[in-house]
Image 1 (cartoon, rainbow, N blue to C red):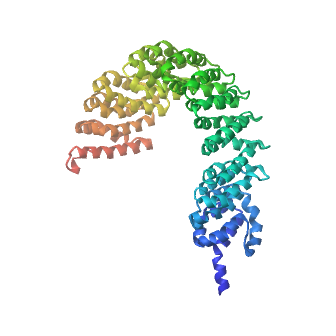
Image 2: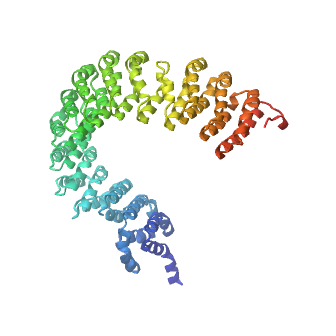
Image 3: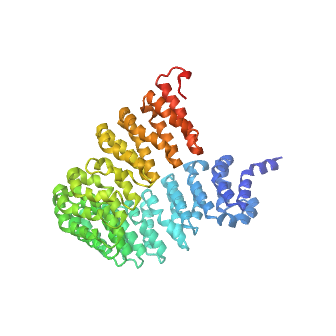
Length: 609
């Protein structure tokens, strides 16, 4: 009987083994995701003594050896299963008995941190970093730090790359002797023979520097930073640039010029465009880290060179930082630096041969107006905006349009209309629908300046028609019903006779949006007759949209109009040959009954339908 009980107690792991043998990858994955349930069934002690050894294929009980050996390759041939396992183990602390026993999770995670697949290693390292915080200082030195050393000294590069991500989490909480060993291990990995390891070390250099004492940052990290920034592999050098930001924030201002700037200048002129690209991409962060004085003396010339770089990717990255760089310049001489050093480069980029460069610049250039003020914007920036509004690349035009509000805040709508709106009117008929959509979204800003409404409503693409009608309602709310009656409504109703059925449908969409804002009088006298007339349209899509429109504007109309004008048309559409028209007409009839009921038509026999 005891033997039988023993067999029953082993059932959860036996089920796990069977599922992991299965050829179905999804079943194996689901099995791994149920590990927490299995651990709860086993209890904390058996999880530590049976489940975790099984998962690491270490110290497995004799009765499971054959089973585990038969499935080990089945488990480890699926990266997705390993990824799920690495993630699950990071949440296992309470399932193994709490922080006191969290070190029991280290063996399986150590094994996962050495596999070939990068995403699995990264997830294992993430889980290791997570559970490291749950170790006591003593356990950290007894269990966790030896694991880091083993990984850092591993024969295969995969373990050494994983080790790079673990130094910073254990360093602050260990003794001085162990700290010295950790620093030595990190130095060794920074000069590893394998580029992948040096890349991993470079990517964690800034993070490791943040937990070191300042003296060791100066004596150890700076030398490592210099060496990595001069590495033969550009993939290592560019990661050193990223670390530069963190290192610069840690050092006193007086040490930056001698310890950091020589390496940063070198990176800004690196022979590899990828390194220069990284410098450009991190330029604003570098600017904040080194402070205003070094920015003025060193970074301004470097930024000019990046804006003029021979590689388009570098110029685009630098162009994207123009606004942010200018905002962070010292306020006392910001305008002089921009006008003298930055603006000439910007003017060249406006006519750059690469569309990605122009597009990147167009996304930020409007922001310069708030920095330079009204006079400089009108004299120097407006011509650039106008040139970009007429650029052959639609993305450039779109980016300029999308930031019009920045300029409007500085120079006002009157100056904007005189300078840019003529070009914007042309864009209302742009061949690219995204450009037309951007124009539509700025209709409230442009309203009343030029007669844009008709051209904007007559856009074929359905999504843009929807955007236009929504904005028409905002315009009417802003300028009033009288303005709408004189300016908007005639143009909307004029499209009811357009030969293009999409334009005729636009009339209905606009009426739907305008009716409530314009009120009962305008809707009944001007809009309703047009809708009723369109019920005879030859296109079924127009006819069923007439039914929908009548239902939509019904609450705005009075009961007399509903009974004498709307009722006959809906009854006729309800007998239409097209099934969709009949359906929407019947829906509208039901909706109109509800409207009439709300208008206090008291008895069912009084209802007109």
